[in-house]
Length: 125
Image (cartoon, rainbow, N blue to C red; front, side, top):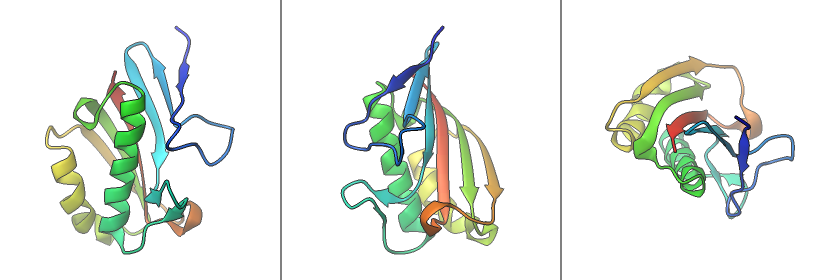
């Protein structure tokens, strides 16, 4: 099997060293998504819930370009800069993933652009 990069015209990567997603062996591996509005290339205003909502919307866009969807997500990795915000984040996350995929959440000290959250997924596709 050879990894096949997925081109997402509406949501290009920040630089050319990676793909927004790669399809391989019936799976779609999506690179971490921040709460960036693709039209402005800036973080959405507000707090953790707004950034989470936008990151999930970005994931949905990338998954659709790969022929997949949020409903096909099997694995989620979340990087958050303040673990105390986890309950607020989960209020937005939960309804987006009612099928409860496997999930790991890790607190880290810093994310690009001062983001509060980054989400990456593996989905069927």
